[in-house]
Image (cartoon, rainbow, N blue to C red; front, side, top):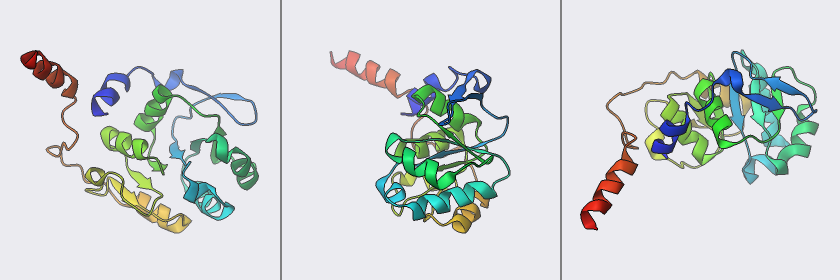
Length: 187
């Protein structure tokens, strides 16, 4: 996954990304923004969790871009209403997502993949889950778990990350080359 992130994370410039809002507009990505992904059942099955996540987004100092998962669209529109701080957009592709990860101020997610991509991009991430998906990312406040409670999410977002340049639990981005060389030796 780290190899793929490195390979594709520079394919799009943030200025080239356009987002389709849920109300039918096409917009450019703001200069400063937070990135939210939220699709897990525990965060989308009723209004309460999503209301708290949106409350946290409303408290931030820049808008939050939220590509809305199809199963959450009706609820997100109803719960969010019209908010200048939360930009509800149609689902986006992998390249657009990693571009947003790379350029976001910080990230709020319940996605296992986005947690890792935030770690790869050295972006502060708060994960709205009650279990750890990737313990490797849970070091130096890089990724912190939170319940869907606005004040707790904000508190975790404010914790400073400590990046250890020597900590590379996902390798150096050359796994594919090593695999090919190992296969050539065998065969």
